[in-house]
Structure formats: structure tokens, C-alpha cells
Length: 224
Ligand SMILES: [Zn+2]
Image (cartoon, rainbow, N blue to C red; front, side, top):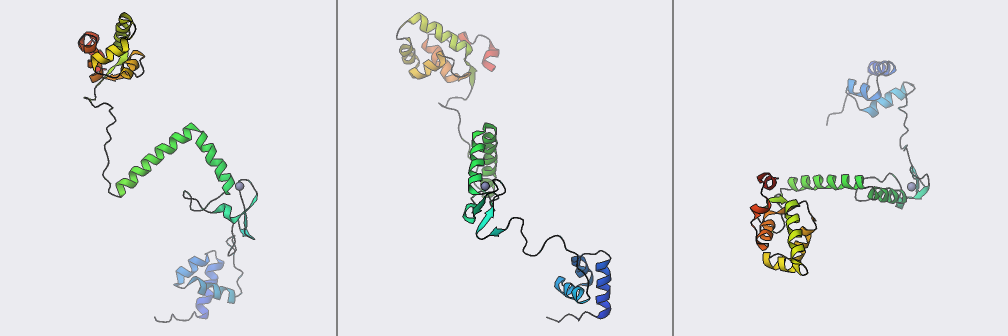
């Protein structure tokens, strides 16, 4: 590697002039194609008073002193082990105690919780996409069927009417007739869900000796 030419007195004087007219040490170094330390040495040798950039070397905003660090959150001096980074942060800003308190508060807040879950979902989706994992299509339609749903209103009314007319043991009888569980019949009777799958609606209609069209006589009801 060729040794750079020594800085001449003339060049040093130009550097000093540039630095004193407001250029930073970095800018002067770039302008003259010299290293920053070279410029620094020559400026000091020329007796120039260096402008501080407001930071001393090794100066830190929140230094570790005798194995302890001041927590900016609770203002306590905590052992450095209380600032060990956790899996979420690169550098723990606050002490472990403060982080625990914050985390608990976050967990109590339902809005924060919802935001976090949404964020996690999007983040994990991105990770899977980046890793080339094929996205999975979950079948969220319980009980299979066509996936078509009808509003529960007319069906619930009809089931309650039928059960009232039947008397005791009606739920079991209707479950048997329609091939559904008693729990399912109970759920429809009590309007547990706003909609019900067309398979269940059809089975219940048949179990009551009706056709589904007789319950949902208006086509708009079925389309809803
Ligand atoms: Zn703290």
C-alpha cells in the first residue's frame, strides 16, 4: 500500500483555515482526502482550539457505575443484571421491575391486547411469507355443510313453538328426529348465535315435519 504523501505546511494551513471557517473535522478530512485522525493531529499541532461536538469520548447518557445503572423510569440505581435485554428488546431501557409493571399494565388494557394480537398476527404472517411457508386455509365453518348460513330468528321462533306444543322431552325428541345433538337444538331454541348453518336449519325443519321454505317463506330472509 503506497504511503500517502506527508501533509505539507501549506496544506496544514489550508486545513486550519477550512476548520476555522466552520467546516467540521469530518468535512475537512473528506475535502483533503485525509483520515480524520490525520486532520486531528495537524489541527492540534497547529494549536487550533477544537470545537467539541458536545460529547466526550466514552461519554454515555446513562453510564454504568460500579455495576449499577440508573433506571430512567423509577430513578433507582439497579444492578446491571436488571437491565439484561429480554427477547423483545435489543437494549433494555428500564430496569426489570419497571418493565414488568409496564407489561402487566399492557396486558390489562383490552385495546392494547387487541393491538398486540393484531400486530403479532401480521408479523408472523410476514415471517411465514419470508420463509416461504405456504399459507394455510383454515376451515372455520364448523360442522361442514355448504357454509351457507341463515338468520336464526324465524327458525328459533318455530322451534320454541314446536317444543311448547310437544311438552316435556321435546328437546330430546326433536334432536332424535332431526339427527342433531340435544345441545344443538337447545342452542337454536335460545337464539345462541345470530345465524345457523343451512344444514342445521334444514335438519330441524325436517325434524319438525316442515320444509325449510315454510319457515323462511321470504326469500330475502334466506339470502341474509
Ligand atoms: Zn426501574
